[in-house]
Image (cartoon, rainbow, N blue to C red):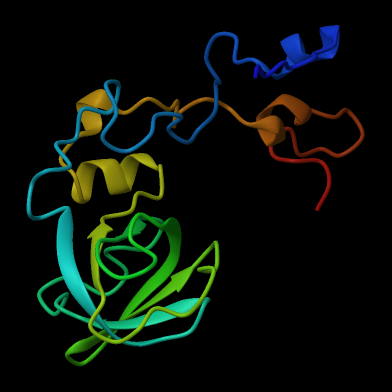
Length: 170
């Protein structure tokens, strides 16, 4: 038995070539370019599911973390029939001693109460989050001071008397 894959020339257009120049960071949190140590207990925790639907989880064990700390992070199921399932966290909010995680990718089925999960902190990929949350601004892989399209499209106009470089369209 063997397996073959046919590809056209267009598949070369899907491969990553070089870097992306954007205001936000293009590194993944904890990778070799980001260099945040994701084994640090400040950035990951183990929690227990109390109530779950496919799209969200109510969990305990994250009381010491700030509201939104795990937004845009990652959750991985450690025990139960869905062990190994992972999804990105859309949002994290604290409701007293219980945390609610909304998932980007719904689980194949609802997790049962008592299931252990690992939750990793999230990053909004902007410079302020990198500085304040991770103290990692020296490894920031974005270009926050790069002028955007508003700067490129603005220019002085002879017709208006106001030539301050602001946008022409309001």
